[in-house]
Amino acid sequence: MKQIRISLKGIAFTLLAGAVFTSCKKKDDPAPPPPPPPSKNATILLVHASPKTGELTSEINGKKHQDKLTFLGSPKAYITVSADKDIALKFSLDGSKVLLDGKYPLVDKGNYSLFLYDTLLNNKIKALLLQDNLSDPGKGKTSVRFLHLSPDAASINIDVFKDKDSLRLISNTAYVGDKPDPKSLSTFKSVAAGDYRVKVKAKDGTKETTILDIPVVKLGEGKVTTLYLSGLTKGTGTTKIGLQVSQHK
Image (tube, rainbow, N blue to C red):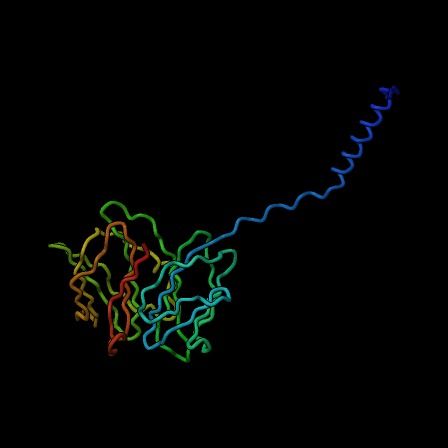
């Protein structure tokens, strides 16, 4: 039987050559690409509050949204959108007549509501983007804010009544107009939760006239709500003036 002899010197040379080859290979390989940055997302609620404006088709970042928006229709739910760059929103009638086309900055993990308001003027409507604070208002509390979105209504006061208690919730608040302040309008007020009688009063100098008297508005514990004045003082049907409830949480 033949014997195979391998010298220690040969083994050492073979191992050394393999080590050099491996070292060179690792040195020549390009570094793996860095992982992509985590995506940024926000949520947005679309609210159609523009009287005498028909059903709207919305596009978000160039893609049509399935649910069409009707005046005072209940928003379906918050929509998750990318916050990596400004969100592009377009709203049109009949899928062709563009009434609003704009870009809006969003914050990562932010929650927002976009209120479409005002009557058609030069075939355009207005939009108000507000940041929503969905944190828990606390035990026995509810969070509420108010928007005056009725284009022809005077400044208003709102008084709310619960059992024997009453509270002036809103004082001398005017229509939001062409240049609303999103920061101040985004703020919610914490009040005791419960069922309230609500009186909306138009102001004329020092004189107040009750234009809406709503027997029950439910502001549930832990809820976050926007109340907004909608419609027109001389409107009829769905366009007549009213107080709407937009539930965020």
